[in-house]
Length: 316
Ligand code: HEC
Ligand code: HEC
Ligand code: HEC
Ligand code: HEC
Ligand code: HEC
Ligand code: HEC
Ligand code: HEC
Ligand code: HEC
Ligand code: HEC
Ligand code: HEC
Image (cartoon, rainbow, N blue to C red):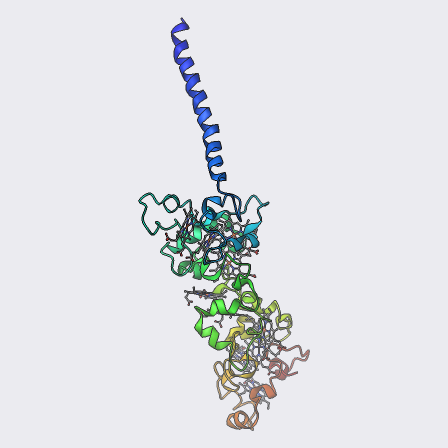
């Protein structure tokens, strides 16, 4: 009864065996073929570096000196992790004088859609600092990872404190102008840099700020402005940029306007008409540079323990 079944069984076994043979031998043969081309920089890059070597007009092999060149690290990419398998480019089946392009080309001249370029990077760099990349201002405005990062060089300018701002200014002309103003953070000196306040990859807070609010971002370095104060000035607790432009302004203290005009954005010019009869706003504005600040010295919040109207008004 079993006999008629034996033949198909044997056939099946043979088929399985040959399948197994193909599974194990074929890649081995392929690997052998690839090994004909010696890797020059990254594991498995022989497929590309047999043609793109150190004679290239763009420095290609220098990627070996970057964090992407740690051959001992199993997570390290090879040329094809970023540029794609690019078989048409390698084989050039039509034998055209100019090869079909690689699957993914980066940089300014690239025809590869930005989301396709970026997904190659995000395959390995999802999460962490980039947890809020999806839907961020840069993602939704089609800014490519490679618009900021240069990968074939050790000198990735956007991660260099001295050179970072220039990379950002290529697109952010307004901030380029603001940081040259009279009163500014020492950004051109590289002492404070864009990424101290912004995470270009996206954040939970507004305007790509590293913290959840403007004030929390500023407290990182100006902790004394956090208080606690007995007498709080509401706009200070709300948003430092009510009065300051953090990139730079032409008024001392990075203020958006001079006093008294700064204060008068929110306070009626007539504030003192009933309380201090001899106070003349024009005289203060013209004759005394500090104007309102002559008396309201602790503008970020007062700690005077007395229960007076002066204490409430941020007198020392
Ligand atoms: C058989 C040789 C050969 C192989 C293999 C090869 N390339 Fe190319 N590649 C070229 C040539 C030649 C050019 C210049 C364009 C042309 O004339 O076809 C080029 C151009 C390029 C360019 C575009 C440069 C530019 O100026 O626009 C990139 C990027 C590139 N190759 C990457 C790769 C990658 C990645 C691999 C491996 C997957 C690879 N190449 C494999 C020969 C090769
Ligand atoms: C196959 C995985 C892989 C791909 C694809 C990949 N990376 Fe990386 N990348 C790594 C590893 C691994 C490191 C080193 C360890 C680390 O910093 O996490 C790294 C490090 C980096 C660093 C930090 C360098 C340093 O010196 O600390 C930057 C920036 C970077 N990658 C950007 C990119 C960009 C942009 C792309 C796309 C064009 C990309 N990576 C594609 C795996 C990858
Ligand atoms: C608008 C400019 C900009 C864009 C676009 C950008 N980056 Fe960055 N990237 C930076 C800056 C600035 C730093 C350095 C941050 C720091 O020093 O705190 C950085 C650092 C990194 C690092 C190393 C430190 C870390 O966070 O692990 C990796 C990896 C990285 N970026 C990957 C990417 C990937 C992937 C993309 C695209 C999805 C991308 N970047 C898009 C500006 C950018
Ligand atoms: C981590 C991703 C990544 C890896 C790995 C990588 N590249 Fe690139 N490649 C890029 C990016 C991004 C650019 C755009 C210029 C730049 O950022 O330096 C580029 C540019 C190039 C260019 C110049 C193209 C042009 O238009 O100017 C060539 C050629 C090239 N790569 C070949 C290679 C070869 C060969 C390898 C393997 C040894 C390789 N790449 C590995 C991301 C990568
Ligand atoms: C390739 C162009 C490009 C580069 C380079 C670039 N950005 Fe942007 N950035 C944009 C675009 C486009 C927007 C969205 C439109 C706008 O607000 O101007 C944007 C928006 C922003 C915003 C406002 C976010 C919001 O929610 O309104 C900040 C902050 C910012 N970028 C910071 C940076 C920093 C910091 C760098 C450098 C590390 C940088 N950008 C580099 C193109 C760029
Ligand atoms: C000291 C912190 C700080 C630094 C350093 C800083 N920024 Fe900002 N940036 C802010 C704050 C806070 C805002 C939001 C409030 C505002 O618009 O004034 C902002 C807003 C922005 C915006 C959005 C402007 C708008 O009108 O929507 C851009 C673009 C920007 N910054 C780019 C940059 C660039 C580029 C650098 C580096 C040259 C930089 N920033 C350095 C704190 C900073
Ligand atoms: C990474 C640290 C850092 C962060 C974050 C930071 N600052 Fe500053 N801030 C500085 C440094 C450094 C100076 C210059 C101090 C000096 O020159 O003595 C400064 C100076 C100032 C000044 C005085 C300028 C003058 O001309 O006297 C103001 C105002 C100021 N910061 C406001 C802010 C605001 C608002 C924020 C948040 C948007 C902020 N800072 C975030 C480091 C920081
Ligand atoms: C209501 C307007 C206003 C708001 C809001 C405000 N400031 Fe100021 N800030 C000023 C004025 C006015 C000066 C100049 C004080 C002087 O010359 O005595 C100043 C000066 C500064 C200075 C430099 C001198 C000093 O006192 O250290 C820093 C730093 C500063 N502010 C940080 C901040 C931070 C951080 C925030 C948000 C938490 C903030 N400011 C919110 C009005 C404001
Ligand atoms: C962005 C709006 C804004 C700006 C700019 C502003 N303030 Fe205020 N200020 C407020 C608000 C809101 C309150 C709380 C209102 C209240 O309690 O009636 C307040 C409260 C005060 C108080 C205490 C009022 C009381 O009830 O005793 C004084 C004093 C004061 N501000 C002075 C100033 C001076 C001086 C300036 C300029 C350096 C200034 N403010 C700039 C919004 C502002
Ligand atoms: C000569 C000192 C002096 C100057 C200069 C001064 N103030 Fe006052 N301000 C006071 C005193 C004192 C009080 C408390 C008055 C009281 O007894 O209620 C006060 C109170 C206030 C209050 C609380 C509400 C009110 O009307 O009582 C505000 C708001 C205010 N000042 C804003 C300003 C502004 C804006 C300027 C600049 C145009 C300014 N002050 C300049 C002394 C001054």
